[in-house]
Amino acid sequence: MPEPDPQTIRISSYEVSPGATPGAMCLTLRGAWTQASAMPAARALLDAAAKPGVTTLMFATPDLGEWDSMLPMLVLELTALGAVRRLTVDTAGLPAGVRTLVALATPSAPAVKSAPGVPDSFLQRLGRETATLAGLFAEMVCFIGATVVALVRWLRGAARVRACDVILQIRECGADALPIVSLVSVLVGVIFAFVGILQLRQFGVEIYVADLVAVIMIRVMGAVMVGIVLAGRTGSAFAAQLGTMQVNEEIDSLRVLGIPPMEFLVLPRVVALAVMMPLLCLYADFLGVCGGMVVGVNALHLNIVEYLQRTQAGSPWRAACAACVAGAARRRSGRRRRRPWSCRSSASLRQPRSSRRSATSLAFRS
Image (tube, rainbow, N blue to C red; front, side, top):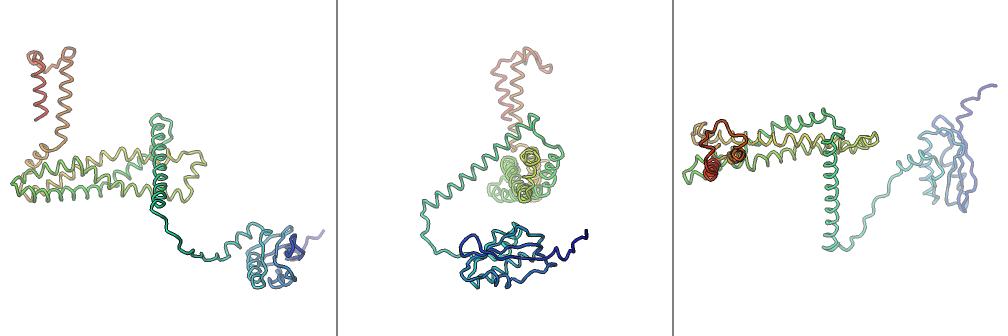
């Protein structure tokens, strides 16, 4: 049996018949409607279908073969010609792909500006803003709760967190942030030293600029500057990374694969921040004190050893260390009967408690 000629297969044919509703005409498409096939012109199709009393042109494609972009172009041309003749073209009977291309190629109607209505009252605006803030607060609480749950699972060994991810985030949060943290901390120490010298010089106590810089950097500005740097640099980087993954549907892909995004994406970053934040604070405190020392040594012509002694005397860490030493001494003195210190003499162990307490308080005050 001879094979059919390909040219006979790639023929576009149509049939015009009355539609299911009054005033409608159905255009049935058969065969292949491609650029290589002999497609009829749109005006010929419309002349065949536009009978007197016809207001709607419908399509039926029970035996439609292959088609390409020529078929959507034909439908668009029929729509334009039908609008001139007040004929509505209904594309519901066409394949889904053709309808999608026609919808994309059809220009959307310009948005009609509505007339300005009555502005909302103050209570309406307040209620709308309150509802928005309440929604944002609820999302934040849910995120914090999910993070805490993931952290607890990780501490119990039930969460799947790769060590390489944690190390990578520690490097990004710590080592990569050292240059900006160093610059900001040194500048803050230098600025406070200059301002302190100008103010303390009025009273003749410029030497106390070392105490001023130490207290400000260690108590407040070191942690504040590190927090601002991490929030502005590292936090924005995290937001950009996770936002890009959300747009590219990578987070949805993780959920489909059964990988919790909180454990795979959020938890390594939280652990890295928790590890590096105290270390960066100590680093910022040290550099801030060094910046103040540079100003004090060059502007006041102080000795480096003298400046460091004043820094140690005015540092809040000194009181904390003295408190720790005093607490440890009191605890060991309470256990003197079971575990006496070898370095103490028997006379010191027989001292009354009031004298030991006064000695401890003197050590704390010093």
